Length: 402
Image 1 (cartoon, rainbow, N blue to C red):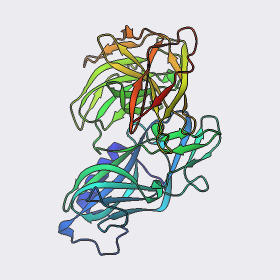
Image 2: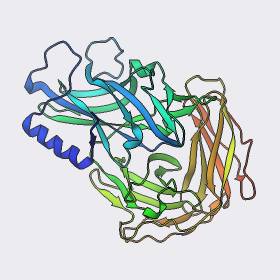
Image 3: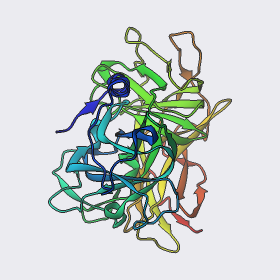
Image 4: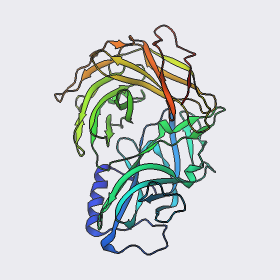
């Protein structure tokens, strides 16, 4: 049975387990568990950023494997397995705003661990699937590595007689790519993030429900975290590394709203941008346009795709991504719609609320964007200014090379 875990309940259960020695989960090792004085507990949970254009993104998880060596191969000894039995089908879109899905816990030798692998069930019978907005459930093609284990970068310590909670952030938006002919493929984008809930939070007006509001935390135009508001209008950009972030809020038929240089200085506290009594209303209406084209890879790849972002540089402020999309895995075609023609509304961060936005001068000018194309293993490219003030732009094409 699926169990959603909020940050508060996760912390509470962690304390109780540490006090009571709670069990659960299972290890795939046949050897007996290590002595209590050298053993620790690893708890594993899953969270997600929002997806683009889907009502559901489902993955069926069968196992999580961990190893102390980053170079250990599948058949090497020393693996500890957390078996998810029975395998669990999870809709990643239910896990935004800091919500966690507990996958279980396992006893293992204490020490430093540097490799994590996430295993999925084969894509048969819609084990792994997507539901396009307004469409029906469609099988999701998964790479062979999903069955042998999607390898994640990690570096964590399991204390002797204690517990470490591992959280995997599965970015559904960046992980789903089209393959033409109505087919979809999984290109997993997953990172290990801290368990403690820190970051940035705030509220948008509940009157914006149905306007596809998305909130992102960015650095130099690169999206570090993303979320969508809850039914109460609250958004939480959670588990952020320490640093300054530009927060970008977008919605259908509205100008983008940008809060510049929001400082995240605590690993356990939130930076608040607005309150439930004074939420962001995003009151500046805007017509919107579209940019499309192709982004192909040379040499071609069967696994990598280009990621496109439409960016604007705020004069005296940051460069931000307003919209982003993956190229099609087969054709390289992409399309980024809902691009505001009005200039972004900008305010530099202040701890004194409420924040007041004003229209920003941008480079390029309002209604113009710089299109950035990037893919793993290929040199990124940025287009000249693309102006969509009077008509949508087509044929904005890229060929990426190593």
